[in-house]
Amino acid sequence: MIRYVNRAQLDDEKYNKCIRNSVQSRVYAYSWYLDCVCEQWSVLVLDDYTAVMPLPWKRKFGLAVISQPFFTQQLGVFSFSDLSEDDFSSFVKAIPKRFVKVSLQLNSLNDFCQKKCVAKTNYIISLNKPYVNLYKEYNKGRKHALNKGLKQNLVLEPIQFDELIQLAKTHYQYPELKEKDFENLAKLVATLAKKSKVSILGVYEQEQLIGGSVFVIHDHRITYLFSAMHPKGKQQQVPTLLIDNLIKNHSETAFIFDFEGSMIPTIASFFKSFGAQKETYFLFKKSLL
Image (tube, rainbow, N blue to C red):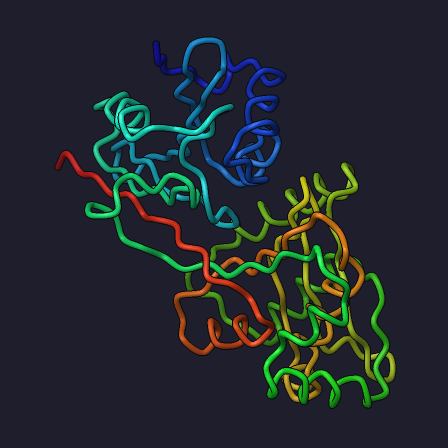
């Protein structure tokens, strides 16, 4: 039986065990992760936490709506064993009617509503090969960019998250992000740091920070969560240097490098240039209005 459980009544230990051991496991779904990025969230729970579906929600114009929080790419149903289409449908039907709108990005293994959902693209690389083999998969342009970056007088080292946010706010505009979203990201990174599940790397040119990125390292998956660049950073191939560094340092492991997108052609082309493979996930929408 599927039941609706409010966050306050959730058994965190059983819930997180389900996420950790699920076929579809993603870091975004852990309770401590959702606590950082959601206004409110509840869960649909099957039996004794053999499968779960987190439901991030908020109020909009006084109405309760389910919507994807920033900094979470894939949610949906998580289960100990492979889901059937009927299993998935049961969860969707169990979403309470009080949520008048649903807009939720499902994980790549929740692919049962392809005709009704919007397909979205992610890119991933399996790092189980020696670096020399992974490097061979880079396209010609990416190899050239990497060699160009390596010839610059640059220093790559860990940085404080505050430095990266300052760089981001100085050189970027994020029309979709509000100040609260940056606060949530800072809270998330602090939580990840306490759990030793994050790497925040920056690149300096003559003591000036010209770019940096946040990588979540959890459950055999490295997620490219956030980055910011000074205009010089783009010219000096800093994004390529940062990603290549993670790929090199985690080669010959069970890790997957997850680029988190993208539907934007130029960004997608950049990700593909590292030899990344396409992973499709789906946006599920439903409205009672």
